[in-house]
Image 1 (cartoon, rainbow over the protein chains, first blue to last red):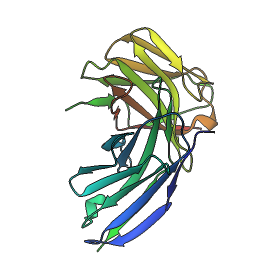
Image 2: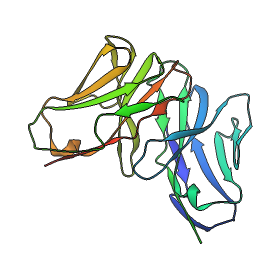
Image 3: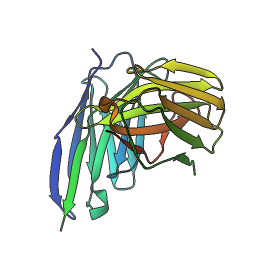
Length: 113
Length: 112
């Protein structure tokens, strides 16, 4: 069964600190992996997208890594800001049609003073 | 910037009512999607459309139908709303099936 598991479920960090969110997947055959940020009450917004051959991709203070061999991805946030408080969702795409996306349940990050 | 808009942010309906959720995108995207999002379950695909008048069932189509008469507009219809359809509904669009999906702000539906 295709699954995407994220950890931790929730995380509280102090402003300015770094953090890393994890995503493990069992999706096959793999096409790409995306990280989305979802603010409370809003739709998800894409942060990064990585294909099989890419192992790192950055978007400002956000850096995603992908290990296709171990089927793991991480999202590292550097020098966190209050505006980083959101849910972060890992989404894995199968090869084929658009319907073949598997969503993780997200990590809820809270950045505090 | 891609803009995906949804007709309502919040909606309260009664059991048995017919409910229409509208989604409009302004980037001439071929593909449009309807998801529902529930706590602890992640986003689940209800229906998607890859062209005008074309649709495909997603993972949880039961109790829903869709309509895509124009490229920019994709409607989700709850024929007879039930309390278990209380949820956050998100619309998305993408240029191709492999590219990033752009999401609308969501409609939070409460069925009483």
